Length: 273
Image (cartoon, rainbow, N blue to C red; front, top):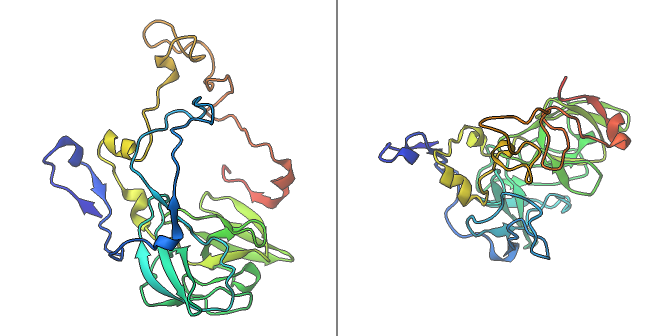
């Protein structure tokens, strides 16, 4: 963590990363592509996602979430910053010459080797195995929901899940939210905890930092006119005399919107319990 002398109001409470773990240099050009910006607008120019726009330009890094290059060891060449996610990414050089990015685990060092396998192997940070080949109690991340579809869960900076147990064709995994979920044992996961543990401790210090991220100010419904929001209008701080809703009338603040009965059977323990 890096703290600043309070020579301006915006620096008084601001903290940032010190980036000591980041390898100096430019990203791998062959794994970067242009990231178009919409400003929240669709192909007709209409705003379909509010409060988006501005922000710094970014290149998108093509990250390998599938880890399907099996039984071939790869050397960690660099640990890099990725502007598109809170996690750090690691550049892998495989022995056959191919280069890929992966989500970097905490403690991974330049020069180490990692491998992805369908067999049992060393339970070391960065190695990827099928859940059936990972011991119970192991910290994991980048977890697949469908075999071969690539990791979809537990990918943000500092997060990790725990493999609780294995029962038949399912593994029980405790996610960072507290939810306990069944996942097929043929799904792949990576051993370790996602790097950038200090992400949750960052204090942005001023509103401008949010603007650099491409997020515009969020306007309260009570500050609008009746034509713009169900909470709009009134006198002073009038709340409209109704329960909180979205601009389109859907209840919020506690109203459950989950509607996927097909996967309810895989949730062993709800995160709200």
